[in-house]
Amino acid sequence: MLQVLPRTHALFLVKEGDLRSKLAAAALGQEWVETAPIDIIICAVYERTVGVYGERGYRYVHMEAGHAGQNIYLEATALGLGTVVVGAFHDDEVRKIIGAKSNEHPLYIIPVGYPKQPYSIEEEDLWDYIMSMRKKTGLMED
Ligand SMILES: Cc1cc2nc3c(=O)[nH]c(=O)nc-3n(C[C@H](O)[C@H](O)[C@H](O)COP(=O)(O)O)c2cc1C
Image 1 (cartoon, rainbow, N blue to C red):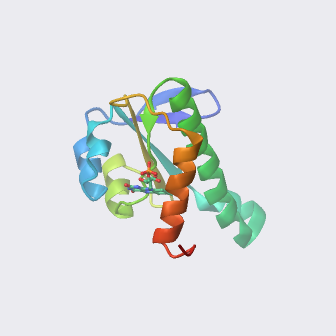
Image 2 (image 1 turned 60 degrees about the horizontal axis):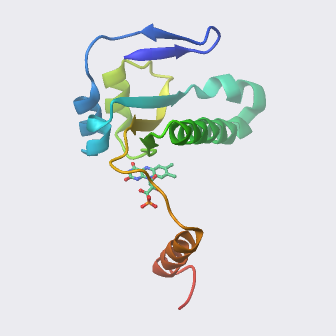
Image 3 (image 1 turned 45 degrees about the vertical axis):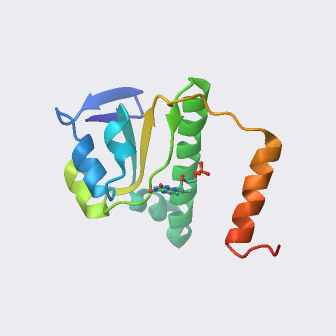
């Protein structure tokens, strides 16, 4: 397991070995967490931001994690790779597996891998999908 060191743009080896199957189990058995070549985990340290912005800092942390996640989607797409954000997991188990401290809260597991087939969709099909989901969730009538 590698940790990103933002100041030096470096990777630091934290733990040897393959943690993916344990991580997948902690993520309710989501198989892509186990089969993807890498999983990127984004953890929040709330007090850093809340210490500056007060209660509003909580929402800023979640916005910022979303930005980082979106950048991973964009970069993966640019490289012809596939990704999906995973938010369904047991926090304490993930924290234990990766050896995070008690103030480091995992928000995202982001598996990145090779898509089985390149993803492409026509705008019209995408629109049909959005509309079908809105109907399904009762946000729009037939
Ligand atoms: C913050 C967040 C967390 C998510 N967590 C999961 C997850 O743990 N497992 C999952 O299958 N989908 C999760 N999703 C949904 C997927 O990212 C994706 O939107 C969903 O699978 C629909 O994909 P599709 O439109 O390509 O079918 C999450 C979405 C968001 C925005």
